[in-house]
Length: 299
Image (cartoon, rainbow, N blue to C red; front, top):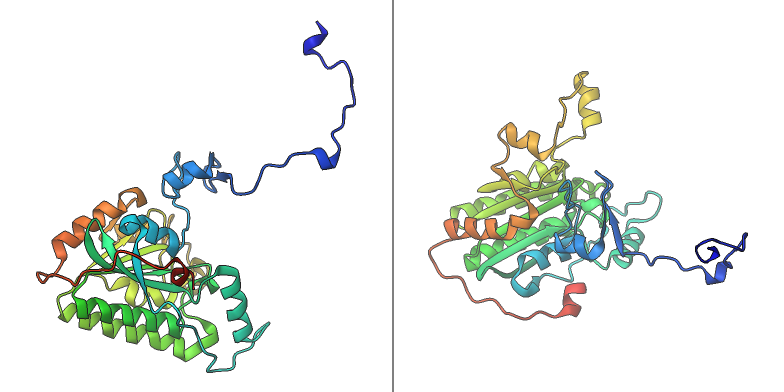
């Protein structure tokens, strides 16, 4: 019965003949360690099938999820930061920007766009954490302010998707000024009666939390998102007390009244459509272009 036994021992496959699994085929959940194919993970909108852990995703994925047929017109796509303070840490700020732009294929930490969600016009500003931690610099503030102006002028509901470590230290005071500027623009949007929905994702911290992220007509969040101003370690050292379990999670923040509800990413599009239908202005918005330039979206 040698046909099912290894007769020859010590068989070794040469290195050049070994076959490796290509990268990007499998996903392992960081919470429950469940393994799934990337195709299945994408089908579930980057959430775990077993524990529902919501992976961090970027503006490209959110736009694909929210906009009908992934069609939108990107606003202010080519805006980039200057170096008003001539800031240098381990490298000069312009060099850091250039390296990050090359690595991420993004111009800065936020993208803004106008498209349709379930046939309803919507302006979306979505932050990208992979661009210097989603930090808020002058370009981030200016693009959000211009997107708010666009929504107000065309009377289109505005959705802000926050994902940030806070203000960008390389721009110091210029970064902090964006808190006041975006908040003032949102006040004008409110006076015009145009709805604003703020969506907080993992993580939303620092000056972003202290400004536009908490000013929505509805403040919503994804499950398990870290939401706060200062980090847990800083707070613990400041007050000298142990923090409650789950402190600064979306669920904790909801329980203490700072959120309206938590929405699963798989139900996000429909729930946003319901909110927009309920809140949208009575005037009819201008029609949106139904095509986009792939090259402009990547620029």
